[in-house]
Image (cartoon, rainbow, N blue to C red; front, side, top):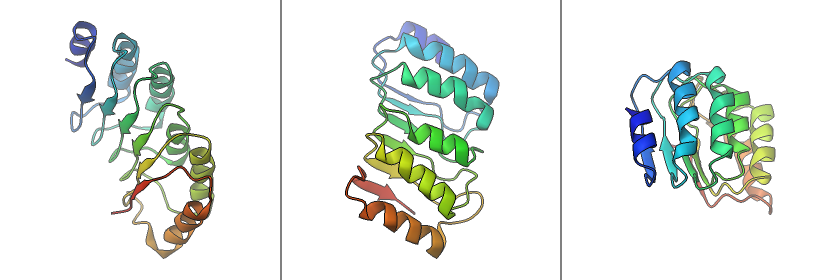
Length: 159
């Protein structure tokens, strides 16, 4: 369905594919089709079955789509390296990575913070993960990120 929409609706600006049981094969196909939608500004692939092997083709496709500024990829099975890679995409302004497989420990928060400082992300969804909630330790690390004058965040969801 998404390939039909992407191919035949070049003016599509928002695509929500949440809760569709999308796997690596589906993401690879979706990534191939994203170039056909130069006006797409929002992609929601939350609540699917995305794993780390989905990230290389997806990030490559998203990097070639400069209009896309909102990515909702929450509630999948993505780990810390993939989430950091997503936070490094230059055109993303709103990113929701909550509910994935990360532990809110200092190395991950530092890697995420470094990625955020090099991008234009102003809104980050970072709710609890598969490995637990942010907790006190994670909140301390996040607060150190927010104290940085170069931090671009304007909105942070820690629910």
